[in-house]
Amino acid sequence: MKLVWHKLFPFLEWLPGVNKQILRADVLAGLTGAIIVLPQGVAFATIAGMPPEYGLYAGMVPAIIAALFGSSRLLVSGPTTAASIVLFSSLSVYATPGSPDYVTLALTLTFMVGAIELALGLARMGALVNFISHSVIVGFTAGAAILIAAKQLKNFFGVEIKGGGHLHDILIQFGSQLSDINPWVTAVALLTLFSGIAVKRWWPKMPYLIVSMVVGSVAAWLLNRWVGVETTGIATVGALPRSLPPLSSPDFSLDTIKNLAPAALAVSLFALTEAVSIGRSLAAKTGQRINGNQEFIGQGLSNVLGSFFSSYVATGSFNRSGVNYQAGAKTPLAAVFAGVLLIGVVLAVAPLAAYLPNATMAGILFIVAWGLIDFHEIRHVLSSSKRETAVLGVTFFGALFLELETAIFAGVLLSLILYLERTSKPRIVTRAPDPNAPKRAFSSDPTLPQCPQLKIIRIDGSIFFGSVNHVQEAFDRIRKENPEQKHLALVARGINFVDLQGGEALVAEARRRKAEGGGFYLIDVKQGLWEDLERCGCLDAAGARNIFMSKTAAIRAIFQKLDKEICRTCTKRIFQECETVERVEPSAESPQQADSR
Image 1: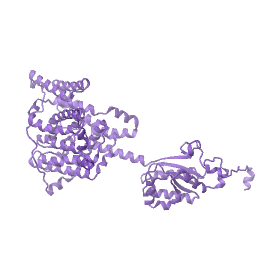
Image 2: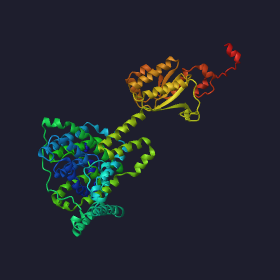
Image 3: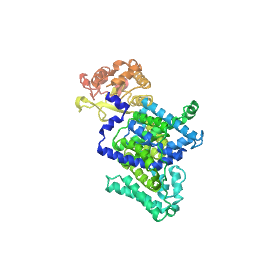
Image 4: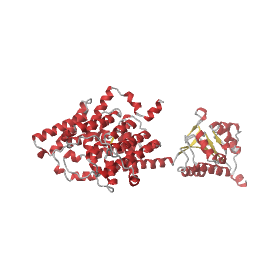
């Protein structure tokens, strides 16, 4: 019964472990997140073509629901740049951005996205995230971190950079405006940055992000007061409206659902990938494991319920999740507090956002971006595997120069291609009994003698349609290089499964060996492999008597089928059974005798 309740309400699993220390850390992290989302929410809503306050609404209810019903302990859901851009491009063809009709369409799309996400989670499709390798996460995180910093260059240096663009667009625009850098703005941003670094290094128990935010805000206020806003040019977030998210209702008409269906499916796929990728990247830093099914359910519920509280599409936010982690969050309560405190912040102190400089926000996000780059793991991947390096590189540069979701898909696709390429070429090694090993165990030592009539190999990997060609080429090569070894024994301990095409390849080799006067044998067959062979009808075709569960039984049976005339003149005697055959020295014949024969 307890397990059932934990499945229905996953927060029951971690909530009992919350103590005063964890609660304090989560409250501070939640407060930081609530403040951080103020300027971001307004900016994202503007990108999405929604009224500014809707960006704040998207950071309230969805963040709370996703935290309670998801699996990640650090992921914070809310509005994101990617979701906002896709929302605008999908809906602007049906209604005027910012209009009531447009808002209704956005809420409907949000409900549909949540329904799709929830359905995938309930259908146990969370295993899809297992195809996102660790190298994809590392590369994606590093690339996104650089993008976060790059998109803050305009606020950090006080220059005009149009649009959100890709990295190269941002850098080109920034490079052309180096002479226009505002020293007052840059000073505030640098003071925020260095104060945050200093607090984190020398006073680690203090909430360095909040301290740096206060330091930057006070410095900007003093500069504007002493020098003048016209001279400093230090812009602030601006006062925000005081309002709770009003109740809303999506449009469930068939025409609307039909029109938005393609966009809903596309948004759902990349939103889930983004959320789970962010969750896994943060989990890698804390040792937590992400339950993909539960994360799908949490994201789905957050959007379904959010659509009734004036929220547009929400998913895992890199900025807010990164801030949450850097601020010392311990449990999902931090995200819950962030959503709840955001409501309080909007009601109580939203007008004070007029004193929060954009330069201070830029400095804070620079700190967050730096903390997201896992330099140790990047060095480890680069020095360990060329394949994983390629995956990391594709994802990293894709995140920099393509869309984030495209970068993830590219990394996952390359991972799958490399995985299939690797599994399509299972390792095949020659085996022989080692007289010096206990019970004359098989060894892959190339110096060990081999039986003149029997070739023993081991295949490490499954035999399926993708690897059949590689296995058949190995069989042909063995037959060509060792024509006198008419018998072939395959140690099957490393074979996990065989599909229909793989089973047919084994049957074909057995028939070919039999036609040449030899035999084909399987040794140490697992139960699962035996069932696969039986299911595809290959057991009878290959000959069940040639399949053995142990090495001893196999060698004893195979030895009976060897040519004893060859055994009598063999000097290698590699099997114990060879001692039962009387050895006969081959007679020395003169060339003339040989010719007369």
